[in-house]
Image 1: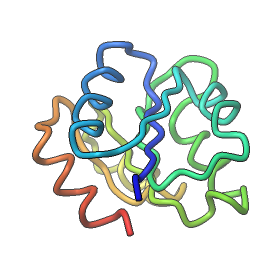
Image 2: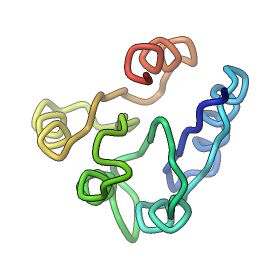
Image 3: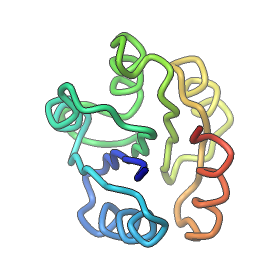
Length: 121
C-alpha cells in the first residue's frame, strides 16, 4: 500500500525537490503552497506524513501544525518542519505546536528518507 505525503512550501522548486525524493521512494504526493492551501487540499484525504516549511505567506508552518493537531483526522499524523530556520527557540516553538521533527534546509534526500522511515508508521 502506497503512503501519502503532503508537502507544504511556498517555493515551487522546494516542493518539486521533496516531491521527487518521495515519489522515488514510493509515496503518493499532495502539494500545498501555504498552510491555508494545504488544509483545503487535505480536506477529507488521509495522509501519512505532512512536511511543511515554516515561513510562508497566508498561513505559516506553525499555524498549520496547530490547525492539523486540532483536526481529528490529523491529530496524530507525523509533521516534519523542513525550513532554513535552525534556532533552538524556533525548534522548541515547533515542538510545542506539535511538530514531530525538524530538518534544516538544504536537505539531503537520504537524510529525509531516513527520518521518514523513523516517523511514518
